[in-house]
Length: 316
Ligand code: GUN
Image 1: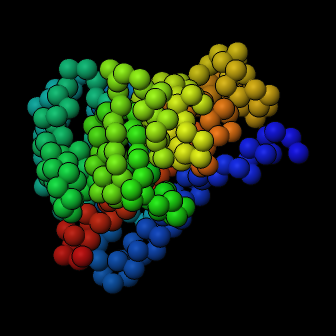
Image 2: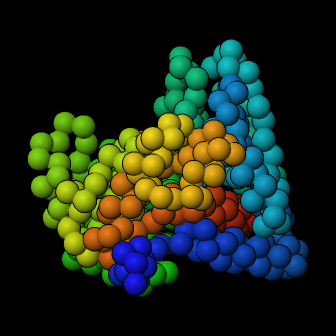
Image 3: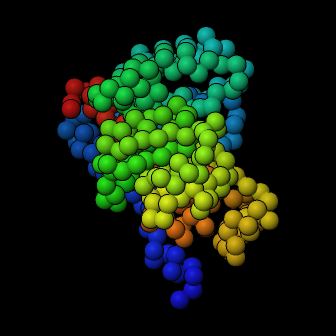
């Protein structure tokens, strides 16, 4: 048996792509039932500002997924030079439009536009990203509201792989409003003991090594390696970094012909915040990049949009 085979049998690959497809199929079935019972088709409106190529790819994936699930996905693209007043007016139009159940402003916004003020303008009942202060408050109070898609996707992935959470020590590396902080709130709700680490954390490796569940969301290529991982830990990689240097690809994925081919074809390879090759040798379960957490973000956005629509249509 080669070392690679031994690693594969020891460590469960948490297949986000497969779980996301399951969730999307479930949403599609529920949308068909809703429409079959005379309900209105759920609608998601996405606002994208500027021409950031990565954001365009993500937004395209979100609206396509909506259409596939039988929902109505609509995108409004505005120039990076748009004024905040124009953006506010667009949000107001979405708020007032009864066919729009979910509103999403793709982040990051170009510098100079006030994220917070714009996010606060979204009707909390249509805030399918869960970024409005009302929904953030509900999350921390343990009350119903919309929860951000990426961390709720992580919870759903763990649930569908029967990974128990109660009493476990979860360590999150990264304190962003989109992932790190809501991830902490959700893990706490599932009875984990939660630590949040960040760029000023002292003895990072020592704290990470205490984790039964380690969540990496820092946006730095292969930032956490085997020194940060307790043998048998469950490792969740939320990072999505792009590398272009063949030597770096070879260092991170020695002898990996598929990734070398991806680099030749696309000029870049997607890499997480975890050193996957070395960490998967000691973890009990790990999400890959790509096809790990990423697809779950889109799937959970659909779940939130369907829920918003049902609530707005007076259904539970
Ligand atoms: N940018 C990166 N992740 C997200 C997300 O989950 N929602 C929005 N709106 N923008 C993002």
